[in-house]
Length: 567
Image: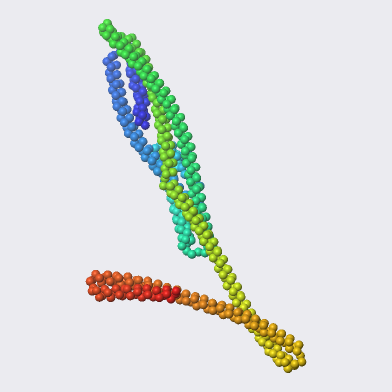
């Protein structure tokens, strides 16, 4: 910018010199047309023109200084607005990423609203420098032709939109916090409460689904960021290629500029030679003419003015050519500055891209992704352990079911044995009745000595009946013994359960008693410390120690007795 500031006054100088050269040309032409020549008047006019040129030069230098100051301020303001624009864009991107973190499952769609490549960070809209931030705020390229009321309404709409988006973001954050608290509560319920196996499986499947959904969301966000990163790298590579082409074009223009400067230097040397020849011709003609005539002739003055006019015309043409070359040089320098500025913007974008990869939000997203992956692995291990525990629980349930089935079968056997005992008793009674009848018949048969066959049959039947009765009596005894053992076992189990419940109650009461005694012990120790500070005698201390130690001794003795009684 300083080169353009230094070259801009040189662009204006040929116009001033052209105006100044036009006035002496008219002043010289007027005496030539009037056929009068007055060197004093010409000298006076030349002095006035020189004074005017000096005044214009001083004014031009003042204007140059003011322009430099204003352009310095403008450059500082431009840098400030560029930095403010970058901060604004970074704020927008941070808000979008925060919205992604708040809105679950919408990261891929929300990331599409990030800064596009066509409008990179740090670039400025096509508007004056003082309107850049306002254009950036209302999202327009220029505010020309827009009234102040419309600008105010646009700013209010932009601020209202930002407020609404901020409220929505805060609402999403609140919902996310509630959701996370609910998840934490469910996880704590799974870890701390005693749930059934089916409920635990359902809760763990829900937690797995939530972690998978969160991991998929983060994976989509990271993939979208990688795609953006690739787009930025392609755009930066294209801009670097364009910058290299522009650098080659600048080198070519610099070579042409060197050639033009050499041509200008050669023309300047020719101009200096012509001026020296003119001065030599004027110095040789003026003494001879003064010596011969004592004054200048009008024809010599006209020839001299014509030569001066031609020289001035050539000088003006050379200055115009030089001004054109300088303007071309300034345009080339401005193009170079714009290209360097674009290159700096692209470098800043590359830095911003690296900043995105090393930013806190990106690292936080990666950390959270790793955290959820570790949580997922941990939950998988816990699920596997629970499944292994479920296998053991299933085995234990199968064993319990087998034991219950055996107990039910034993109960059925006991019931059947009771019925069988009743049946056997009835059969025994029938057998006894039959035995009595047979004895009566035996007596009758004994009386009847004539019937020997009947007696032998009766003897056989009596022996068979006695054998059957003995077998039935033995079986009945065995069933009675089994029934008595079952009844005794039931009574023992009931008594053991009652004793166990009594012991549990006694242990609980003893625990409460020990807690009370410990509290009393602490209180007594506190009182003892207070009394110790007051220098009580040893008897009172021993008494307090006995009050402290005796309850604990009683509790210990009682616990030992309880253990011995349980064993």
